[in-house]
Picture 1 (cartoon, rainbow, N blue to C red):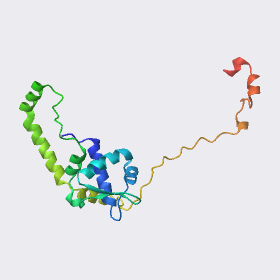
Picture 2: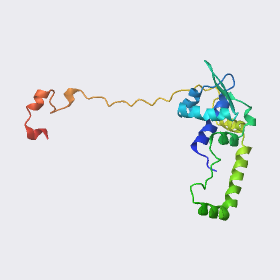
Picture 3: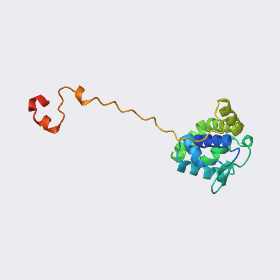
Picture 4: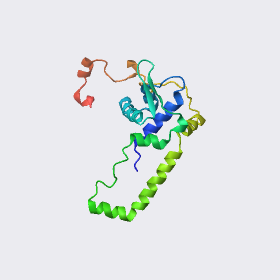
Length: 182
């Protein structure tokens, strides 16, 4: 089993949605700002989540996404399975003989590992992630804010008079002997 950043972002975005959907649908643009992720990438993820029946969408002004079920009825495993391509065989890039040998030697280990990971992810509900965020002090009604970089202050220029020996015009610069310029 491979859980990529795609799955991690989907879980994070769903947690964000569950925290903030109380009054109205949540726009992906606000989730994008809070999560610091691409809006087009979130649109792809939420399209897969909608197809899986985890979210509902509302079009138009004031539209956005809401959970299709209660947060305590959605597991992290469902979210990850909705957005990850976990049906592909991890051994597909190996030759037939090599893949068969790996499967015969360690197949039980990896299948056991994968089933335990899935059991754990199924035991974690979206509601428990929301509760963790609330315990950390995340405000559920916090508006999305674009994170603007702090402006860098330019060094204060010195007055021309304080620069001793520096010519104050191009013509004065040309009058300085060549050896003195270097």
